[in-house]
Image (tube, rainbow, N blue to C red; front, side, top):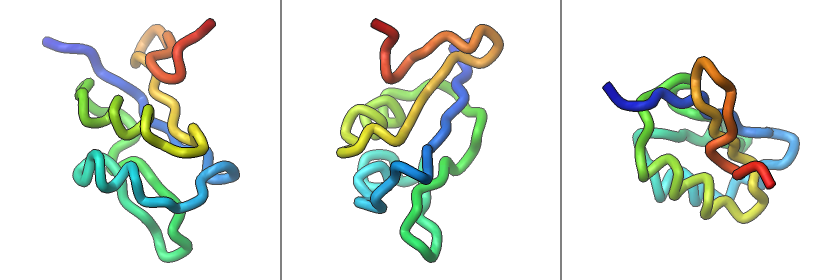
Amino acid sequence: MGDRWRIEVDRGVCIGSGMCVGSAPGGFRLDEARQAHPAAAETDAGEHLLEAAENCPVEAITITLLGSGEAVFPPED
């Protein structure tokens, strides 16, 4: 069984570019105010989700490992 991730979007930072929806259409959605939301707060790890977080122009997406809370993205320095 693979890793499980917690996906969060800081809606105070999100600018609604929609790049996350383009990178991971099943992983994110935009609401009426064009704010991104994860499709599921807890999900199986997936390269498409990591790519969406990496491509967010304002780094509004954070991914942590479920259980440990260890940062997946952005990586800890």
